[in-house]
Length: 170
Image (cartoon, rainbow, N blue to C red; front, side, top):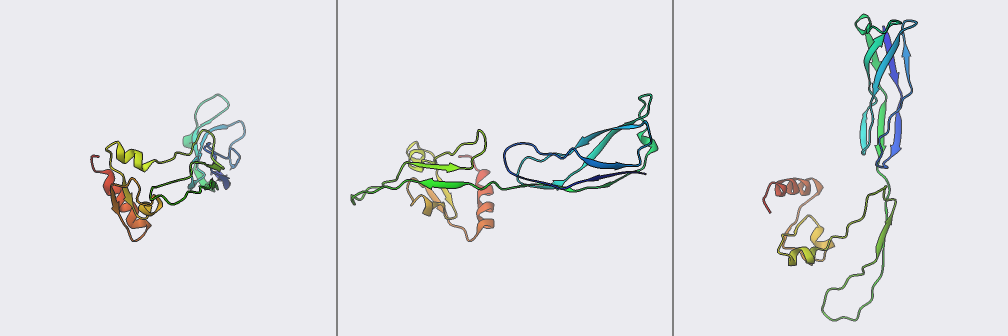
């Protein structure tokens, strides 16, 4: 039998595909070569480090894969979350009963061409659009610009409500 054993690999998310091209192959007849396709991973998660045998060629270039019984022992490919550090500015205003916010902010650890997007809920609301706050989002925005708030008991309920809201025509 032909035996293929793959290794484990782990990376921190960086927006790139990751794969391990080194793996153990035992039992291939001399002068035979194998063509493989290896697994890759890009986003946060875990998957098997699979290797697919596309063909096994003899010395004359004929595919003889049907003559092999192939066994696999797969490792795993893992991408972990990338840490982000957020920094915000400070602001000081005398009380005047109006809403104020500091405009300066930045984050380090952002990958490649990814960007931070500032959500301006009041501007969205003023443009006549719905701004629906699910969970504690209304608290984060201090209610400013929110047209509808749906408080939820936990993250799972928040995700369920958000998925249901996506089905609506806004």
